[in-house]
Image (cartoon, rainbow, N blue to C red):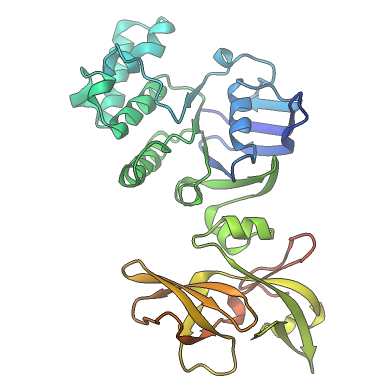
Length: 364
């Protein structure tokens, strides 16, 4: 296996569209790095540049100790798994998995051994003589994974490989991928628009927007200490709530004030008086009917999820907030409720740049 280094990568197309801007990203040997972002953020383009399917306009790409910026895909020793399975329909599972090794003229004994080992690891042993048309979607994706693994490349690249699977198969295959990474200790770069996949799979997660790297960090650091409002909104489900308002200072104490919304905050923020954007995650909002002195609102919608429920609340100032609460408290639509938000659970962002001012649990 090998490390991958992207150094000041730019990608500009002839029509003027910019897919990557000054992207520098080191990927450690054996790491599973997830590239995540909305459609058009440049994540698939970055993956294709690592694979050699796209050339960067400027910058360098290094795999291991070798500069591969201008090398064709076949000379980079990487394996790529796409959203489509790309299996040969006339070949059996065994033949599909062995195809890459045969092209490289590996000895028959080596081919048989590697295919058998990988088929056993992926639970494909009983399916080796079947053809793709006789397999389920999840089985086909495992064959595509197996075909990549038998090659023993320097790195694996995954371009939204689970997008065609149903919800249950996505969860099962995601768990298989995580176990596979631990077993192989392989360098993997995984592209997805699904932040749940990103959080559950990645050793680190790189968040992209408009071709620019917003933040790269372990999953829980992204969740707890987002660098800006975009990362805060993209990571976490349901998404973080945001309210524009002002921090006011009163005799050394600090409070956040917006239309129909007042919240005591850390006194250390008294020196930061002025306009801000408050952020609070749905799981950090508790609801009850008796709390005094804090924000209040009216329930507009309740979505039961079993042990939890998503509750939408509208404050008197017209701020729509989402709370994730246990099913022990079951408010009804149009019922007034109080919102309890601990000062330590609140994030603050600059209203102009979107940059973080204070992360939840931090001190100013």
